[in-house]
Amino acid sequence: MSEDDISARDALAVAQRALARVNDFEERIDQLEASRGELQEDLTAVKLRLSEIDEDRPYESLSINEKVGMVREHAFRKATDRNGRAKLDYDDVMYEVFDGKPGSKHCYKLIRLAAGLDADEKTGGTIPGFTARDPSSGNYHLAVDAVEAKRGEVFFPRTKPDGEGVA
Image 1 (tube, rainbow, N blue to C red):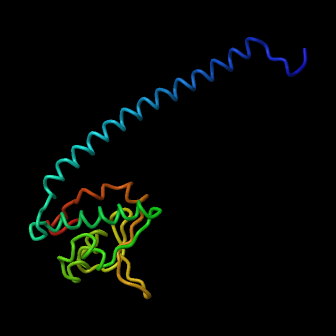
Image 2 (image 1 turned 120 degrees about the vertical axis):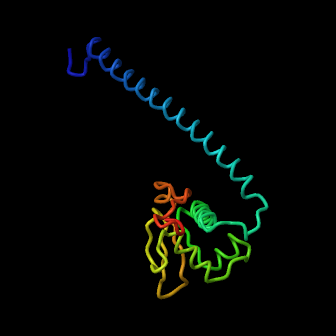
Image 3 (image 1 turned 90 degrees about the horizontal axis):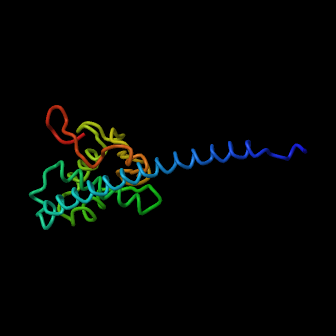
């Protein structure tokens, strides 16, 4: 018998280990499929609820939290369409998100709030994936990293302890 010869017992042991791993993978796939199904149902329910709220609603009736959520959502969608990163300056916020309704000063405020900054902070961010930037060459903008944004609950505004704005 050469070294390359494998006994039937050894082959059976290898096959049983492989079968056990396949069974583990199948179980994990079943769990992931169930989780995906639940997430799809939740997402559909949220979309249906929000469609009734957002549909044909005048800009003036939107709360600051809703506006910030809309800025974040638009920035995130833009980033996912562009290799995971995007920038929104005041012009993008004004025209792409709100069809020209807010003034530039309010757009800058929305950019700061979308990054999770306080009124006196101009750059940085506390919301995963969202950063307000003021480069020396270029416009003040909200930079978005879609991968980082997916890790946080960025589309669900959290109220600050003093009740002003969103975090």
